[in-house]
Image (cartoon, rainbow, N blue to C red):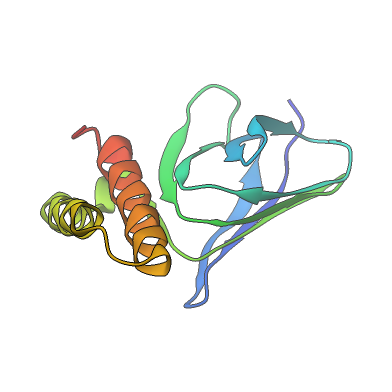
Amino acid sequence: MQSFKLKIVTPRSVFYEGEAVQVIAKTQAGNIGILAGHTPYVAPLVPSPLRISENGTDFRTAAVSTGVIKAEKDRVTVVAGAVEWAEDIDVARAERSKERAERELAAKKGDKEFERAEQRLKRALNRLSVSGKL
C-alpha cells in the first residue's frame, strides 16, 4: 500500500510526523478513512479516537480533542487542541475530569457553562474510551 506524509500538531508541539498508510478519524459528519491519493478534503474533528496505520495492518490509537483534518493528495495534516496516545492517558485524571463535568452539568448553570461542561465531558469520555477504561 502507498503511504503519505502525516503531521499532527497541537498548540504546544508537533505530536506526530511520519509516514502513514491509513488514517481513520471522526468528523462532525461521521467517520472518515484516508488513504494515499485521497481527494482534497477538510473537515472539523470531534473528540474521538484517531487511528493511524503505518503499515496497513496495525493501528495505533490516540485520543483527539476538537480540531481539523486536512487531506491532500500526498499528505494529511491534523490540527487539534490536544492529542494523546492511548497508552499515555492518565486514567485517574480523565475520571476526575468526567466527574467534575457531570457535577457541573447537574448544577444547571447558564448556557455557556453548560456547553463548556458538556465539551469537557465528551473529551473525558473519549480519553477513557481510547484508554480502554470505559
